[in-house]
Image (cartoon, rainbow, N blue to C red; front, side):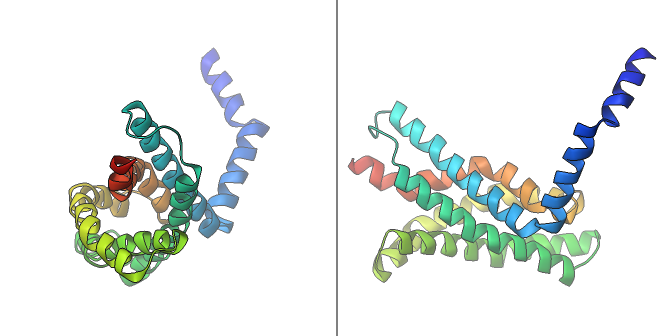
Length: 197
């Protein structure tokens, strides 16, 4: 009984109220900025982890900050796309019926996934000042590997996302799953670069 009173006091404390307020501001009032921030952080962290692994494996000598910066910016552009994708999918297919969830998952995989991959490589091509042929070659050579991997990871993850997760937390959930995928994405994108160094 003593523990129950202690827990009740904690739940009624100002700190918990402030956390609730911050959460409400982040995930309601400024949801787009929150989603973009989460996506960019996940991309940056994924690249940082991948680079540390490459350093440990003696594939590179030191951390390339510009590479992480570029991956962070790609997280911003992909984060914007994901934010609006989830928003419009919920408008087009409201509710949590199995039929609507399957439609959302299929649209996410067949339409949005290739768009995200193209946007990812496109953002990096602009930042790296690559020409059109380099961009096109990268999408053809590396994009299919990411797309194949996405079919292994995202359909089951998105079933959970569309069925259980409230809409305002979908990009957050997506990025919790995506951290591992962001590491793999960084590896695929920079695989040749690492081997040449």
